[in-house]
Image (cartoon, rainbow, N blue to C red; front, side):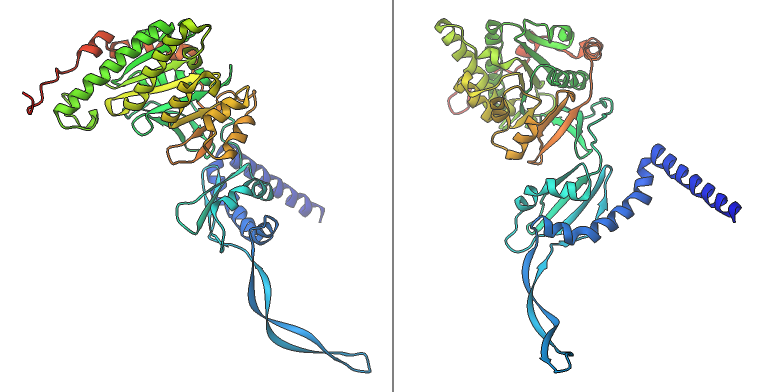
Length: 444
């Protein structure tokens, strides 16, 4: 008997060690074959209690076969009579079968009468604690349906290396909390605001963009209001670089003039934007990288008022009209607030891409994410200083996500700038490579 016991203990230990090694070295197959089936059974078994605890149930009338006390005899025996009657019961939302994902699972629910997706979003944290997962995100792609996406562990703890970019003006800069790629696509979202305090990952994101855009046929323009210390090492790949407000004003005037020339080009060919032009006529797209946006709006005395107003107006014109003519903005800053003037507020309205790293004041987070879901604002304020690169982003699908950019060192970005220096057209070539606007036929 003792030998059999030891033999059974040895088998159990071997099985446990094998499962641990399987989980450790090939988590994906372990999750699909062992972890997820157990989790799916637990989800379905606990759904009624969890829905009741999160106030997601509704009272409905149901016919129920009940026992009702009847006549009590003198012997003390209780006689009961049985009958069908309508009673109120708690009905839970119907749940489809859960489906596995790379970092967890997702499931679709049928909402009950009077429910909307926001009712489920309000209790997402309760659902996460009830199921013991890292986070639960709520989405809806069809009326009457709500999708819950759960992540068992935080995919932002460790991120991969920056992958090479294969499409024009599109760069995969990091990973979303769902495990999917964090993509910055200027063709879809033309202008971005990138807010963040010192050491929050703001500059690292700019490095990732430079590495991703360097091999592409695009012109990169830098506005470095730190005196050039941020973008000067990347000068071999930049077509133009401005390091003072006066230089920024001159470069913005060039961009406005360039937009006017491209307007004429599109008008001659009856095109609404440069992407409708023939490839032989299409001008090179331009990505403008602005660092320390607030420096363009700060005023020491009234003598700078006219210069700031001119710069602000030119930048706003580029934001309003630049998309159709291949000019895109990526504006970064530590402080983005309404106290900088109406120009910042107007620029913010033109930038549909929003990225908010850890910030030191709530107004910057409000300025960046204030018109999104209030939960996004709370998540931005909860970013820890020990997690540089983590940000709240407004995605192309209209929702917001936690995301983290891939780590890209300054040395890596400098190497990419030197390697692809031959891809950078000179600013003179960019300005002169425009066709002459022919006179209109009706006025000729």
